[in-house]
View 1 (cartoon, one colour):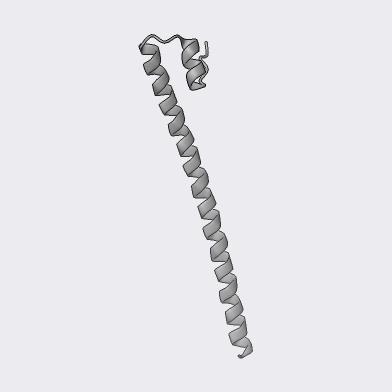
View 2 (view 1 turned 90 degrees about the horizontal axis):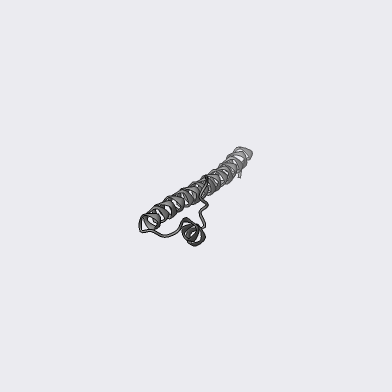
Length: 73
């Protein structure tokens, strides 16, 4: 194998490692975004449930205990 071939092979290997790193970074970012989106949707669902429970006449204290939400003044 010539020196030029060795250099080219090393360049390809480095590019492959960089590509893996970039993909892993993107994957981690996607997971973080998905988790945050899930938390936001969960909070929205919890608030909707609390509103419905309050409309049905449940005491705010009971709704807060059941949902884990707090009712600010």
